[in-house]
Length: 228
Image 1: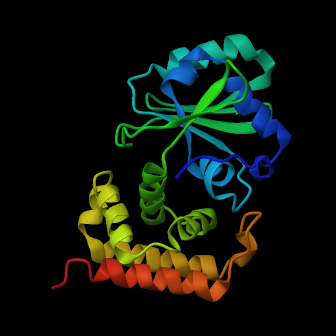
Image 2 (image 1 turned 180 degrees about the vertical axis):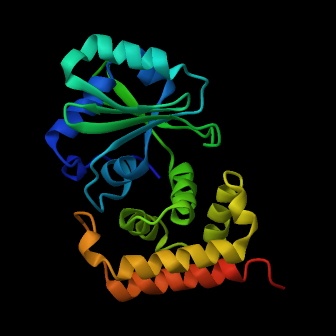
């Protein structure tokens, strides 16, 4: 799927400005790619508003050096939330930005989106976003993830869904236990259905029955995955 930007899916103009600001750093341009909800909504599906910026890399990066670089250049505009060897979470101009070293992300081509002649950001490919979204459906329960995965896959056939499952299996061993995966998604769906007030700001409306039917079909497909 080709990238096509819709700036109305940024939560604020400030969020876009922060992404443009970060694209001015060579260390970020050459190593990181935008992924997650903002990549999905702004550059692909245009289905909702997304608040944060998730920047992943598959490279061995010293995040403490990146932290120092950004702090030195941005000064009081930046605040650190948390940091580990593989994770750096910051607030930059009131926008949450997470830098993550993610060795299990695929190494398929990632298109560049140019803000101007010099500044660009790489956008994650849909294959990686899709399998990551399936992974988070099992590891946590957040309404926005169920919204995202539905919009990614609502027109997919079973074969395409199985491919996404196999990609998720490469990233998380829990997918070896398909009944557990099916149960986790089923329980998560119950939470989402009972908490529709937690839906993110949607640019594309959802038909509730279609939404629930999609996940019931997905749960059945996963549960029966290894059955003869």
